[in-house]
Amino acid sequence: MSGSAGAGRRIVLWRHGQTSWNLERRFQGTTDIDLTETGVTQARRAARLLAALEPHAIISSDLRRTVATAAELAALTGLEVTYDEGLRETYAGVWQGLTHDEIQSRYGDEYAAWKRGEPVRRGGGELETEVADRAAPVVERSADKLPASGVLVVVSHGGAIRTTIGRLLGLEPHSWEALGGLSNCSWSVLGEGVRGWRLLEHNAGSLPEPVLGDDV
Image 1 (tube, rainbow, N blue to C red):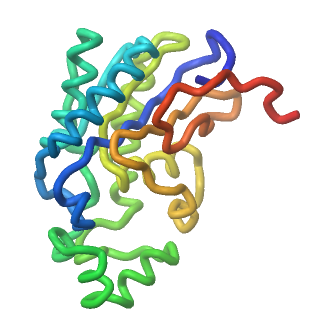
Image 2: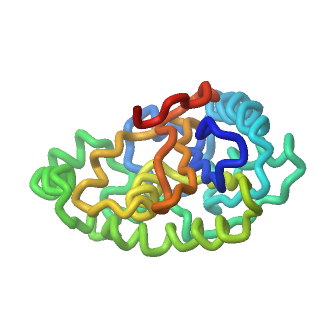
């Protein structure tokens, strides 16, 4: 997906399929919500595309929505999924189960500060940097086990993926919000470069054409 064959390891960070709380715009956090029928269909479609990358390993959050998503890719590839609670979504305390409108109404200052990139314990829960502290090392350890040009698929959650990308790219935490959100069952791809990890694709839902003439 970086456009050059044998161009180093890649990490595909794949968000889970749709849930009913996604439709209702409820903050899920670590609440364990199942996929909708549409979410299962999304996972099956995306799995067919990601299987074409011939991944070497799949790791996943242990929440039901990610377990069900990862299972679709495992069924096609024959790979065993490794589950790790370190890949769970941000714990958001009293925000969990509330819609974004309800959060803005009840915790407006806290919500606005979070959107500005300030360190906020949303609902009394985790800081984004704490999510990165637990999730990024899980991804790095798994990536370290890949062969040259190997592909790791990480099945996780929108917020956890954003903080992990920010950490792996070496971005300052206040800028992580600049990484746009992921649609259900879309993914982002990091590629190994000479100066570390590099963002190759973001919020993708199809396999891209090779990148030709990069940086020229």
